[in-house]
Length: 54
Image (cartoon, rainbow, N blue to C red; front, side, top):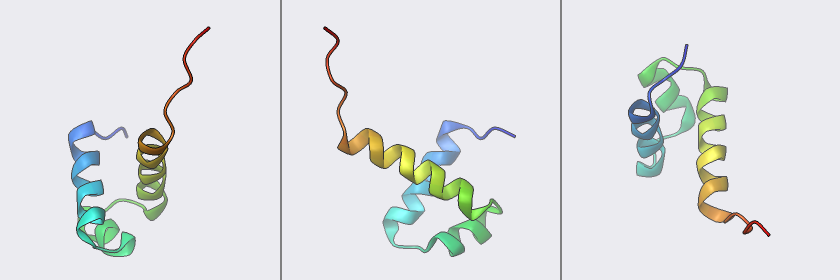
């Protein structure tokens, strides 16, 4: 099952508010590992800009 980007942002926003991954997982009824992978993808995009092509 694929989740919408809006839903993913909503879940990540809860984490940024200070809720634990376990609490957010229970609230939205999704696996902890799914939340962790979404969080990692967002962190990578924010911290590492792409190198320019040629």
